[in-house]
Length: 137
Image (cartoon, rainbow, N blue to C red):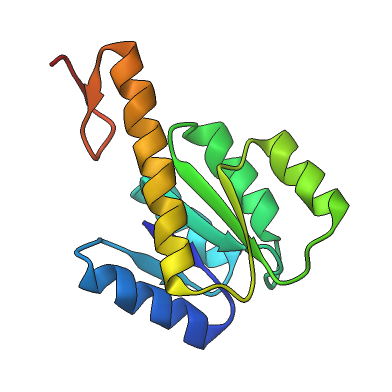
C-alpha cells in the first residue's frame, strides 16, 4: 500500500494505523517521490491526496492505473468540485473520499473495495493472491 499526502500528520497517522493492522505501507509527501517507488515495488492499493506539491494526485493515480489497472486507487480531497468528481469517474478511480475523514471511513472504503474485488474474482472463477498472481481454486 502507498499513501501520498503532503500533510505530514495525516500521512504518518495513516501509515501508523495501517501498519498496526499488518499492512505493508509506504508514505510519501508528493507524487514525484512516490512514482519511482511505486514503479519499483508496485503496491496493491494507492491512496493519494488531490492537491500535492508538483504533480497532482489525480495525475498520479491515472499513471498508476495505466501501468497497473488491477491496483486499487483512492483519491482524497478537501476541495471537492463537480469537475474533480467528473475527472475521478472518467479516470476510473475506485473511490473518492472527502476530507476531513476518519480512519474508520477510510478502512470501510478499503473493505468495500476489497470485497468488491473478491466478488469480481469469484465471478471470473479464479482467485488472486495479494500480489496479483492468479491461482485456480
